[in-house]
Structure formats: C-alpha cells, structure tokens
Amino acid sequence: MGGPGDPPEGTPEGAPGGGEDEYRSVVFDESFVRAARLQEYSAQERISDHAPAVRRVAPLRRGLSRQALVLVLLIAFAFGTAIYMGVRHPYQTPAAQETAEPLRMTVIPLAPEGKVPGTADTAYLYERSPAAQFKTGAEGVPLPASRRTAHFSDSQVVAALTTAKDYIVRSALDPDVLTGREVRAVRVLLAPDQLDQFDQSFARPTADGRHAPTGWLVRFDPSRAELADRRVRVQGTLQAAEADSSTLEVTADHTFVYALRPAGAGGKAEASLFTVRRELHFRFDRDDLRLHQAQLVVSYVQAGPLSCAEDSTNHLRPLLAGQTAKEGGPAGTDPYATGSATALCGSLATSAQPRV
Image 1 (cartoon, rainbow, N blue to C red):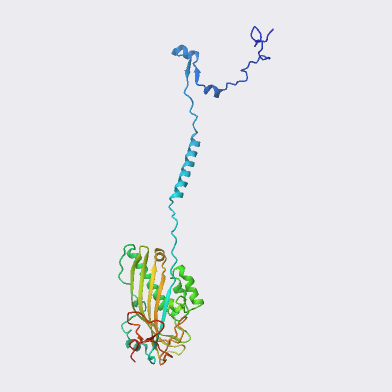
Image 2 (image 1 turned 180 degrees about the horizontal axis):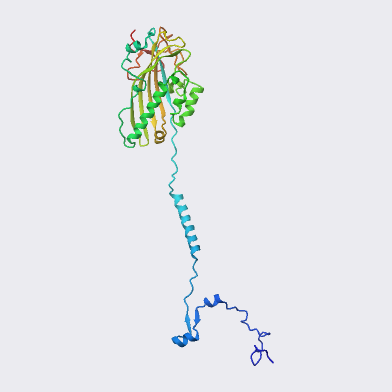
C-alpha cells in the first residue's frame, strides 16, 4: 500500500524511489517568483476583471544602485580631470630662465700731469672745481620722468630706475663701502646668477675684466686715504629703455667727486679731490623688478688722480695733495666730459683739477 503522498497507482515504474520526483531539487523562492516574466492572476482577479489567466510583467531594471552610480561618475570625472590636467594645467612649467650675463668691467686710472692740488678747506676745493654746481649725495642721482613702454608699465619702469639708483647710491656713496668695511649692501641688489662672480671678485681679485672689486663698487685703500668730507658731490643721468618684450635696460652715467686726505692724518691735513666717472648698464627681467634686484652687465670706470703703475683692481689708491704720479699715460682725459674713455691708462686733464 502506498504512502499518503503517493499516487493511487503507486510510484511509476522507472521513477526515483522514496517519493521524490526529478523537480524536487528546484527551489522556487520569492526572488525567483518575482523575476518571472509571466505571472498568474489570482482567482479573485480573474473573476472580477475577467482577465486572462496570466499577465506579462515588465522585466525588473537591474541597474546600478545609486551609490554605485555616484561612485562610477566620480571615478570618471577624476580620470577625465587627470587627463585634462596632463595636457593643459594651470601650473605652467616655467620657461627656462636665462642666466644673467657676467659683468664686463673696465677700470681706467687717470694720472695727474703734475702735483695734486690741495688745501685743508674742502668747501673751497669744491668751489674751485668743475663740481661746484654738483648736488650732494643721493640728490645727485635723481629719477627721470618715466613713461611706460610697449611691454612694461609705468610702475615697472620706475622699479627699474629705483633699483639702479639704489645700486649707485650704495656702491659709490655709502661711507662704509667707500672705506672697504662693507660689501653686502651692494651684493643684495644683484641678481642671484651674478653672486658667484661678485664673491670671486672679492675673494680673488684679478685684473681680467671680470673680477675687479673696483668694477662693482668704489672703495679706497684704507691704509692710504680717508674721507675728508662725507658729502660726496654727484652729477649724472639715468635712462630706461625696453630691450625686448621681457627685458628693461637702464643706463647710468655719473661723475662722483670725493674729498680725501691721508689716512690717520686728522682734520688739519690738506685735502684733495678725487674724481670717479662711472657708466653702468643694468638689465631687468620681470623677476628682477619684482624682487628689487638688478643684473649689472657693463661697468666702465675712469678714476683719478691715480698712478698708472699702481694696481687699481682691489682698491683705488689715490694720489693725495702734493703727490705726483710715477708715470703718466696718453693724452689727458677729462672725466667730467662725455665721450669714450681711454683704454688701460690715461692722464687726468688739468681742467679736471681744482684751481687752488
């Protein structure tokens, strides 16, 4: 006799034993039912709506969840941004900076034709010299009226002129620089690319047109001379011009007149005048203008009274009141006059000396 779950005729021949059919292993769970494309109406729905026995169910959208979609979008955005930044990014690779040109310098001693005139009254010396109408100190280095150029604004032109003036004042009027006690005040105004050349000039002075301290600044041999009057007389010009779209140039041409006396002689010793004519060429890029620094590319100096036999590379060794040069030079050179300077050595024109 069959079991309660068996058909009346018994288990069909060949069917698996134990009352299990071949579909018993298939589990129709809730997710399977919900995913079915055909769904049978209930008996109540078929009676009330006279609907067919089954209805077609729209397939479920198996899209990404909202969180997954947001994550995918973020990844795509980041990837796209990375590609864009690799092609065009706001932090442009800086163009290769041009190295500052080394300073080319010429220092020309001017030997007196006779004895150096002198007197204890420095005011009288100035009054009797071509420097009688010169301004005193930084007043003799006025800034010219400035105008913008094609590629530089008014403020940038003023910045170039101001930096050039500061260099001139510090390198030729600062008493500590003139007496050899200070060089840093001048050094800090130079472009970084020129600092090695500047330092080598003072560590190992050489008359090679590149490494003479007196090409960078004015300084006297402290064992020979000292200032008899700290009020140096100055006259000259500053001019700014655009070299190209990225460079401004400033040309400075000034004559400085110093009253000197023998070192350690005291105020009663006779003083004499010493004249320095400096032509400096400065160059500025936009970084220089922003950082208040300059590239000094040309320094052309005439100075006297000096002896051509003395080395003027490291310090200027002036001939003082009553002294004469051991040897002269070619035709007389007037540092107050414009024009090209002589090479190697020149004679200081009598007209450049005070009439005492």
